[in-house]
Image (tube, rainbow over all chains, first blue to last red; front, side):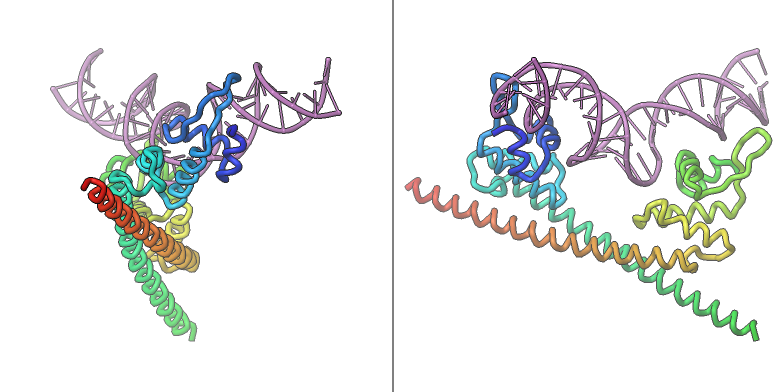
Amino acid sequence: MLIGELAERAGTSTRALRYYETHGLVRADRSANGYRVYDEAELHVVREIRALLAVGFGLDDIRPFVACLRAGNTSGHVCPDSVAVLRRKLAEVDAGIERLHTVRRELRDQLAHAITQREETCLRLRGTAR
Amino acid sequence: MLIGELAERAGTSTRALRYYETHGLVRADRSANGYRVYDEAELHVVREIRALLAVGFGLDDIRPFVACLRAGNTSGHVCPDSVAVLRRKLAEVDAGIERLHTVRRELRDQLAHAITQREETCLRLRGTAR
DNA sequence: CTAGACCTTGTCACCGGCGTCAAGGCAACC
DNA sequence: GGTTGCCTTGACGCCGGTGACAAGGTCTAG
């Protein structure tokens, strides 16, 4: 399987695949003419990468999952390192949620305050208009 | 007030102030020697900018708030444009929270799954060991 | 022989809010 | 006049995951 086919089957671009390779996530053999040649296993690797990226992982976070897949596991999630990353990410997401809730409260308060202010101004203007 | 003093009093850097200026958020007069000279009002403007940046606003989002302050309002939040941005941001934050909750669920499930798998593997290994 | 559909490496561009360095001008004090 | 400490503009770097383009090699079909 050449890079174009892998890209299409994995739903990504050849550019991305080469990028993953330079960052040590995807491996390729080379044919005599220098083309990258992939086996079926790499398809699963790339799909794992894409799935994790979509969830918001960075390439560095993904590395353990790929290693786990390469170690022969059906899922990239079952190795200790992967689990550690999952835990960390879960904590990060929790922190993010909390932060957004704080921001949300603040925004709501400011919005409420602004509207109250506007109504008062409006009333005052009507008052002076008479 | 020169740029260094403003930066210090507003809790930011001169670099940031110049950046805000190039993006039309902060205004400065120039003294004879070309130095930026700020009046007290700009301090409030910069503080407003910083507060909104801290909440996660982009510079473009902040522009209406600055305009509102310049229009003579005590708060930058009371003008219609500002309120519109506040509403939009609130919606964005809500969307962000929801997205993170989705991710969180997914992470939790994968984590649970991974741990279950590991326990099974562990049991199986113990079984074969005997 | 040629067209076109692949592949290769290398490089620039993007987004946003700055940090940081360069090279120089101005003010004030010793 | 020399040092120190402010100020000026300009330009590059960063982070991450690509998109896009250039200039070339390779394979296949007509």
